[in-house]
Image (cartoon, rainbow, N blue to C red):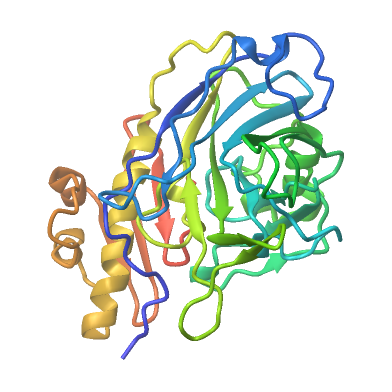
Length: 357
């Protein structure tokens, strides 16, 4: 029996949409997001539990902001709450053992070769490149460093002091576009991927990227003037909370097709959703269903409608889109394709990679 590598989200993806305005002037990083540079940049929606749906509202509020210019991507986040603690000071350590803030960026929207940046309240960084999601056998390249990235934290209170008047910690991040897009240069990728990874320093106005933010928050107790992770009856720390901007529908942030749509605009004006993005979202629902079908029956479905029968009750999908999706299979592989109105074809492969041909 084929063992499906892609667990099914419990709910159909509903990615947020964010219209990212141009930056107003130069950013001086100090972690303080209450300054003119950020005044006209809107907050994202409040973060939610990563599983989405009816899961409890996070006990601490988290929001973020994004803006850009021709050289850099700028991110700010406000992490409210009175439990401000950190332990890790060595760069490129596994940061989610602390409370942290995490950034995920997929410029091409292909779900492969995307970037991750994590930081804690000590402003310690961990950056890595993901060849593809872990569900598809991807590897994390921890030796990769995000070129030119700068970060800063501001603490309203005091780190690691439960007795302090702790209110929030906030972060600012500046990421040069040249550092993000160099991953996709002709010299570093096969020619057939050039269409997915154009070489340039900044996105074009109206372009859309996929991004997500996450906040890892551990349950702690305060005793003897310090914080300690709360443990269960087995003596191990209780599982951490994962609060995100775009819920993935399961406890796994590495579902890039569920991440938020970030449109690069001049002044935050609305942009129409490209046809290929609408179709792609529906195709990934069939993608999940195909893996589930194979888990149950040991082979892939021959039609999208047949696969869709494996979607959970209440999992919303477009039945007409399924009818127009072509399925090609072998015993160990499948590929989904659908024609766009422009005459080109959207393709989603068995390993999750998508492209237009």
